[in-house]
Length: 283
Image (cartoon, rainbow, N blue to C red; front, side, top):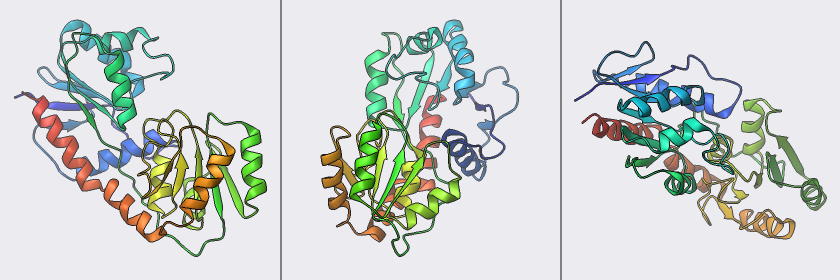
């Protein structure tokens, strides 16, 4: 049985979701010390590296080329999900017979990986979301009928239509807010339209759900929605469909949404999944 080393430790939360998720998971893993899992530090002979950062994509590909066992994900594939495998290192990883395990956050991304991987890579693909730390509080008395989280894949006229329809609305734009601002807005909103068309594991959506705010989105942009329970899935980001779905979300119980999200993003359950998968990969 080989030991595993997580490559590139994260020392503090960052300014965007993946760093925050990595920090939260690393913190939770550190609370369960195991003699076979090391976090950070130099890779030693005989250890299996676990690459989880896009900055180490080339190093993962080198392991594949040299036949060294390795674990990869979640933040390695893909540089661009609309053009998978355009990066040579991605093609090497996806054809690596020595890949022991692949992690990703959502089912649609698992299917994307399966579609593009090559014959030599037979690694299991395990799905888990990053834990959230700190978690937002639960819902408060609503000030907004609609929170719009604006990230990608939408047109300005859609945003304008939503704001005309819901006068008590608030728009938060990706990359232009502080985390606590999102927490407070979600806790005080009756519903959210999550305007994103390409996100394998949106931490902002997890935070919105944990705050008790039901969300509307599409599966490739808001994959954490539990349809009819924590929000509504749409086929596309259409104004009329969004408005109808928001009205449906207004009927959902906000404390109930928060409770379902707490189960979905339970840190202990996530860590159990990660460690069990890594332990199997050691053989």
